[in-house]
Figure 1 (cartoon, protein in one colour):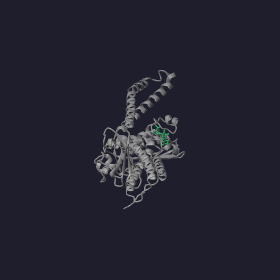
Figure 2 (figure 1 turned 30 degrees about the horizontal axis):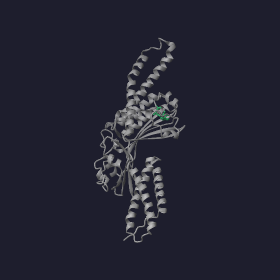
Figure 3 (figure 1 turned 90 degrees about the vertical axis):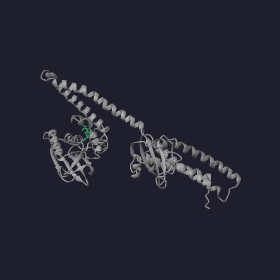
Figure 4 (figure 1 turned 45 degrees about the horizontal axis):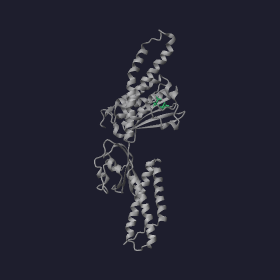
Length: 423
Ligand code: ADP
């Protein structure tokens, strides 16, 4: 028979401290300092330690060598006190508002908290030891687990409460174990929806009065009031700009709420020719414009949205490149996908701004953007349109030398040119 000796209290306390410290460190590293991460990992460590102690106690009953009665009593009192503190901590983990499930190396459930019952629909004692993937059968979460759960899963309906929204992460834990964390983000989702509705409603409400103001300004003839001609010109330009901001905000609201795009053939030869003409019209001969198209492929998606996104990049290249600069529009194969890119020899963008360029109203230079007629929403629209087409935006730039904005489309979005055999 194997014998197990429970460590002495002098060993247990540092052990417990080490478990907590390791948990806290792992939590900080994995969860970017969030209190939830720290406490969840620390508590999971404690759950393991507690079961180890319990196992130790059980085995100790069978141990051959018994300590002296007085020492034994003191020892047991202290052990019980520590076990009780650990139980308190475990109960705290049990009551966390986010779902926590401890899984073994075969994704069988070892332990879960109350929120996991509510949000994931797990039941005790029935689901202890159950295969989580089978238990969540046919849900989005089960599919994600089945595919290896490499990336966090964002904004899914909770299997146990379809009215709640979850962000789910699977973390490596201990020796080949996993910790599944499902964070209830319903309040955040609701606030996002309120923000989206507010922006869409305000934009919609502004559209009509702006159209009226713009219409009347167009009717006024500067020649009737020559002294007001510069003022009238400025008013017209500004009302046009406001109209464009409102239209861009409405476009963004639509793109944000849309989950899929139309699957239509977008003829690239015609679209590239249009983009080049638009660039020439905007440049008015101030830049040299080149088109290089070697991909011989069309796109599958929304013609209107793709035109809007791809022409935004052309318009930016023209607006942020000084007179005499060179702009190249390219459409070429890359791996089994294709890349649309616009390269300019313009002002360029310092590296510190690159990560934020697709945020709404983010500008490297506000005056330059405004002077060139920008709304600050163009790249945000580009990002949303590309997301809807499962494509990716890449930005490379050197200040003073120029920039390249590239849109990477996957194979699933490519079609052979109309009339060819490739589909
Ligand atoms: P905007 O309407 O201001 O052009 P965008 O969202 O299209 O808004 O672009 C955001 C910012 O990115 C711009 O204000 C500008 O500072 C920078 N930017 C975009 N394209 C280029 C480019 N080709 N060259 C240099 N800067 C650019």
